[in-house]
Length: 199
Image (cartoon, rainbow, N blue to C red; front, side, top):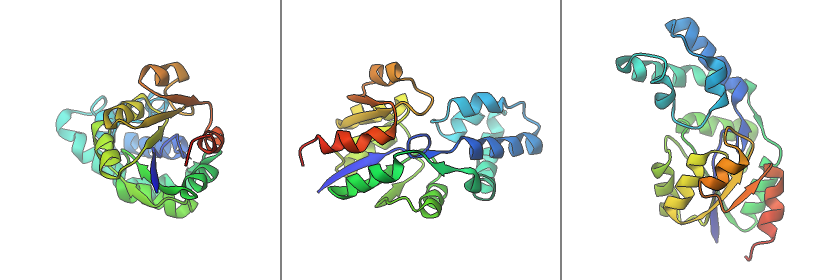
C-alpha cells in the first residue's frame, strides 16, 4: 500500500480569501502595518515566520495565537477546494493512503478536511520544510504534492518524488529549480499522472 502526501493551502484548497480576512482582522486589532496583499501572495511558511515581518519579535507568538484563534470563525466559510482536489485524493486512496502534511495549525487543517469532506486518511499540521520531510519519512510516503518551493525541498530531503503544482506562489520554473520531479499546471492533471505510474 503506497502513501502519498499533499500540502493543503493552494494545493488542495484555495485558502487566500479566508487568510486575507483573518489578517485584515489582525490589522484592526493590532494596528500593525501588515501588507495583506503581499502576505496572501506568498502563502506557505508558518504564521510566525510571516508575522515576524510585521510585528515586534516579542509579540509574534501572541498574534500568531490570535490568528489561529480567529481562523475557524472567519476563514473557514470563505475557503473552497481547488479543482482536482477530490479526484486526486480519491485516485490515491484507490491505491493506498492520502495524507495531508501542512504548516497550518493541525486542528484548523482538520476543520477544512471535515467541512469540505476531503477524502484524506490523516492530517499532520504545524510542520514545514524539514518537518514535512520527517513526516514523509515516518509515514513511509513515496510522493509529496505541493505548490511551494519548500514543499519540493521537503520531498528532496525525504528522498521521495516531488510533484509541484503551479497553483500557489511558486512558479513552474521555481518548483523545478527547487527539485520537483514533475510540475503540473493544475491538480486536475494529477490523476492522469498517477495512473501512468506502476502500482
